Length: 452
Ligand code: NDP
Image (cartoon, rainbow, N blue to C red; front, side, top):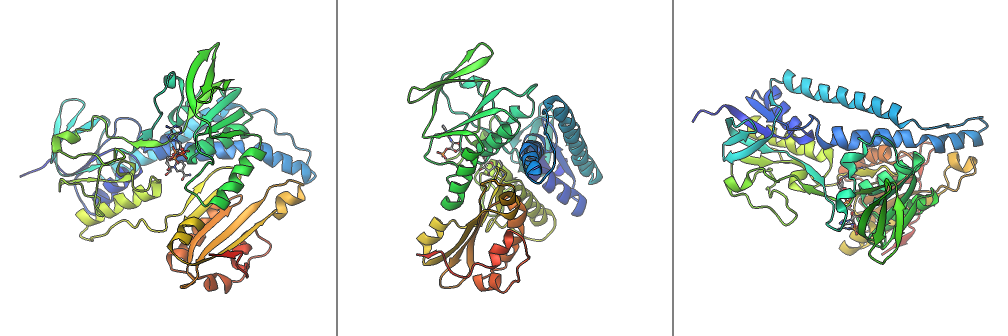
């Protein structure tokens, strides 16, 4: 049977665009891609990129305070959200254009419309047109999840933050994951009175407890009113603001409420029933290690598969799919030792196992150094950083590395290479220190802090 295309990709985010570009540009496949919103997906349009720019914007008051301690007469002045937003919009437009030109350069046909699956080799566009393809790749990503409660429709999500016309005077951030903690720090840094409600006893519960505790302390020390064990029962509009009642009966009024209570795979109305693909327990599209669904011609990559919801992982999955199916090189995306960073202030970055995970697996040694770094210590600030290695007592391999420090994300990228190569504690030890840096602690921790 003749198909219109070799590959039809649904979704123009990180995973979909990478797969389309590699399949068409490097392997010569005839590829089409449909995107119903803006090219670039969550990462570029309403995630990593605008978030990181807001992290930079929010860091200046602290930098100015530090500058004063170093002898500068510096004043941070007033933050102009409108000026920042127009620059942000222009930057996102530029990135979207770059994504589009990458696709056209690879000769990918782009449909700026919604596509749904109508058969194992067929998609239907919102225009009613049907298109056939030998393979279909679902890369529709995820979307914010807000639990149902009275007034939940008044809650903003991470999708809305970058589109706000003005910053509120006060904000409630609900949640304690990556997004909630990052936005709490951003809003606080931008001068918004910030409260954070987290239902569990701690934020960032999947991270190493010692590292997480330090971030939690930093969040509180920065002036954010973090209230753990707290859940929202209702939101009621009140004179341009919002009254929030908690499940334990407390009440407070905020200029805006932002829910960052997790994300769910984007599968609604995708037509999966037409091909009898049943969803997994988290609403995800089940795939095997080759990103293949139960229908041999249909694959899925990225957040919609709920493996590791990170941009670089989706890119790897999309690339491996394209090489396997169109490039004659069978290759699986490697999900082991994926490092990540939470862009809080202070930043938290980690790779590999937490101390608790490693200890449950066998005997370990923990090397941990918590201290006040030279730069902020000189400025008289109480900030502490943490460098921590979790080591397998028998093989001596570094099983986990956890860093809480400015630019921790930049540091963990380097450590991840060593860990991926199977570095032992002794490999770290024979690496000479770079002095004076914070990261030299990674190679100078001689005695274990504890063993278990
Ligand atoms: P997370 O899964 O990290 O956190 C969800 C948070 O919401 C948790 O604190 C959870 O509480 C809370 N929560 C869940 N359900 C409810 C509920 N019904 N009521 C109240 N609270 C609730 O999700 P995020 O949305 O923060 O991030 C999604 C994913 O996006 C991340 O896992 C990550 O992979 C990715 N991401 C990565 C970033 C990075 O690399 N820097 C940045 C942003 C996102 P509890 O802890 O009790 O379960």
